[in-house]
Amino acid sequence: MSDQIILRFLNAGLINVGGDDAKLAKLHETSADLAAVLKKSPSKTAPFALIAFDPEAPTEDPVIKEAAGALQKRWPTYVNTFSGTPIAVLRAVLLDALVQAAAETDKVGVAFVTSARNALPFMEAGNERAIWAEVVVDIERRVDARAEAEWSTPDAIVVPAMIFSPPEAIEVTINPPAAIDKAALAQKFAAAAGPHSMTGATGGNPHWPNQNQQWTSEFANRLAAAVAEAIGVGAKAPKISPVDIAAPLKELAQAVSAHVDATLQAVSGATAGLQRRTSLIWWKEALYSPSASISYRALPASTAAALMAFDLHTQVPTFSPASVAAFLHETVLSLPSLKVDQSRPIRDLLAEVLSSGELTPLRHAAAAMVPEPIGRGPLLGLIGHGAAESAIDDQAFRRLVGVPPAATLKVAEWATWLFRELQAARAAQQGIEVKKKGRKT
Image (tube, rainbow, N blue to C red; front, side):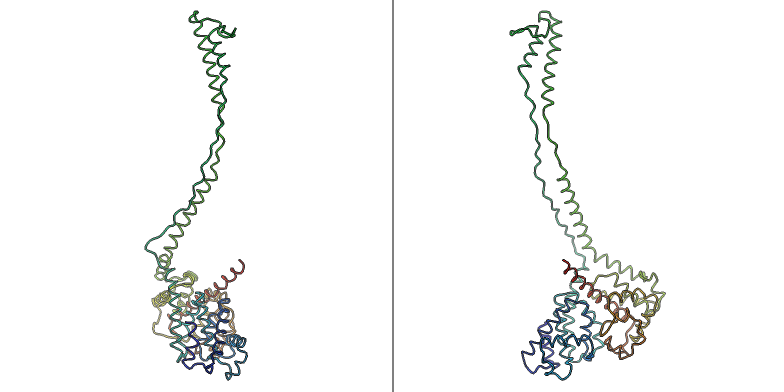
C-alpha cells in the first residue's frame, strides 16, 4: 500500500509535481528517509500522524520543518516548484512514511492507529477521507490480529516433550581377588591330617587317625582354620572402585526443572488472555480504582472516566484488541452519575484532569511517557507538563493538539481518547527501549 499513498494524493489532485517522474521519485525517497526516522524514534509517531492528518497544519510546526528538511536533502530545488511551504506534499510524504514504518514495526502501528481514531473525526479531510480510511483500517486490522492472538485462549495446551539424553553407561572396575597359595594350603591340610607326611614332619596334628576321637577333633579344628584363612584371603581381596553418579543426577534434575518451567509457561501463556479478561470483568463490576484507592462512584463522572482510562491502561498490555476501548466505553456508561448524552469541550475536560487530586497518577504517568510539547502532539503532553496550561489560548490549543478549541466529547469518548493516547505513548516508549537494548547487545 505504501507505494500507492503519494500516487493517490496525486490522483486526487491534492498535490502536483507536474507529471515529472523524477520529482515523484524524490518524494518516495524522502518518505523512506522519514520512515527510517520513525523506526529509530517511535515516539515521533503521534506528532507525525497528527500533522499528516491535518490539512491546516501550521508551517512552523517542528514536524513540518523536519519533513521539509528531509525533502530538501533529496530535492534541493523543491522550493522552485512550489509556492510557499508545500503542506499537502509534506503531509503525503509523512503518511507514506508512517505506513512504511507501521508495516515493519507494530508499535508504530499502535501509535498511528490510536492517534488516528482520536483526531481524524475532527479533521476536515475532504477528498483525503477515503485514503485515510483505507490506511487506518489496514494497519488497525494487522495490529488487532496480533492483539487478538495474544489475548486468545487455545482449545488445547501443547506442552513440549522433556528433553533429556541418558548418560553413558557407568563402568565399574573390580580388582580380582588374590590367588590362593595351593601349596601352603596343602601343607596345612597335611598338618591337620597328622604329625608326619610323606615329605617329613608337619608340626601339625599330634595324633594319628587310629587314635579316633583325639585325632578327629584335632583334624576338624585345623582343617577348618586352614579353609577359613584361605576363604578370608579371597574375600578381602576384591575391590570395587567408587561410582560417582552426581553428574547424571544433576543433568536429570536440570532436565526435569526445565520441563516443568516449560509446562508452566505453556499453561500461563495459554490462559493469560482468559485471566486478563476475567480480571477486567471483576474491575468493571467493582467500579473501584486500584491507583486512587477509591470507588469511581464517589467521583464526578468525568474525573472517574479519566481515572478509568488510566487504570485500564495499567492492567492491559500494549497490544490490546479494539474491543478493549469499547469495553472501557461501556464501563464508563455504567457510572450512575453519568449524563450519557452530555458533551463537554475538550479544553474543559483537560482543565479538570490538570486540577483533580485523584488524577495525580495519570499526570505523573503522562509526564514520564511524553515530553513537554513544543509542537503538535498528544494531549498527554499537556497533561504531564501542564504548569502553563492557563496560558494556552485557543490558537495555541489548535496548534498543539490539532483539533478545534470548541471540539467536544462525551465523557465515555473522553475516556477512550485518553486510553488510546496512553497506549500509543507506551508503544512508542517500548519501541525506544527495544532499540537501546539492541545497541547494547
